[in-house]
Structure formats: C-alpha cells, structure tokens
Length: 274
Image (cartoon, rainbow, N blue to C red; front, side, top):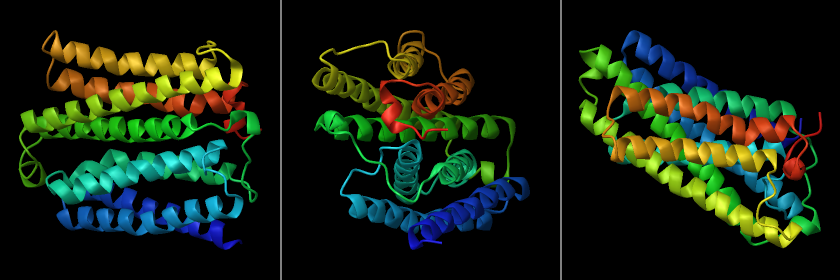
C-alpha cells in the first residue's frame, strides 16, 4: 500500500476511535472517554493533513478535484474548526457525538472512491475564484455541522440532568452558539454561491445555468436563511431550531456531495465516475 493511502486509512481509523469514544462516553457518562475522543481526533488530523499535502505536492493541483478529494477537504475543514472550538471553549466536551461520526463515515466513503492517481483540473476550469468557492463550501459545511452538533447537545441537555449534562453550558448559551455557527455557515455558503457564479461566468459565459448542483446549493443556502429568518423575525429559540439545524444538515450533505456524485452536471469534473 502506498504511504499516502496508508496515512489516509490511519486517519480514518483514528476518527473511528474518536467516534466510538464519544458514543460510549455519552452512554457511560464518562468524561475520560470524551478526552480520548478529542485526542484521537487530534491524532487523526495530522495524517489527514499529510495526505492532502502529499496529494497536492504530487500533482501541483489543488486537492479537491474529485469527489473523494472534495470530501477529504470538507472533513479536514470540519475537524479543524471542531478542534479549534473544543480547545478554545472546553465547555462542549460531548460535541463530537455528532461531528465525529459524520466525519468518520464521510472519510470512509472517500476512501472507497479514492484513486491512486490524483485527478487533474481541466484548463477551462482553472480560475482564482475556485479557491473562494471551495473554501466557502468546506468552511460553510464545517460551521453548519457543528451547529447541528450543538443542536443535538441542546436536545440531550433538555431531557437529561446530572453528570456530563450539568457540566454543559446552559440551554440559552448552547442555543446562541448554534445560531452563531449557522450564521457563519450561511455567510460562507453565500460566498461559495457568489464566487461560483463568477467562476461560471469565466468558464461558460453565464452566471447561472440551473445546474442541479447550483439549484441544490441555492436550496441549502435558503434553508439556513429560513433558520435565521425564523429566529430573528419570529423569535424562534431552543428545541425547534435545534431540530431544524439537525434536519437542515441532511440538505447540506446531499447538495455538497450527493448530487455531484449521482448526477452528470457541469460539476462532473468533481465526481468519480462510477
């Protein structure tokens, strides 16, 4: 096995350890398992970064051309934001209960799609806007995934008390943090759409083509816009928005990877043939 693939599966394995540590930590209500989960995520992050760097240096091409590379980069951004948030606040220890399983499953899927030779970017698609587009998409996904994770913590704390739940911030604080991450994700995803429009204009001569990925991206963005509207205008708080953040995450995942993987579109350069 090539060193690159070996490092990739080491990262997947460590994310798996982190996943089950968080799950069993909640079941057993043991803080030590949350520590193991966090340290496993941190340990897996290093080979994850190395894989991206190796793939990039081997081709000189940005490592997000194929679906597997796009997923790998999206999970990288998610783990990065997750780790920064965890080490900066230290008040949301069970947060990995949702974040790490999603990261683990997506990375495992990326591994099944990965090819030994990195994909290449067609000259017609090369543009400075691609960086804004991809960074906005991956950072936006990271933000809304963490918001959904906070929504799950809100629902858990609302129904439970004692032990790990008493050490979580109060419900209003969890709700506020989730709102902030949704706001950040909404802005970043909007940046992705706008930069994609400029990129499309450079490549195809039109800003919008009703490509299925474009449509689903717009739907996802509007989904989170509705979240903000419900909160700011109608005063929604707490349980309803926690459930909303969890359900809206499904729309984001489908638009980000499901549609490019299953439908032949302008974005087909970013999908693995299957």
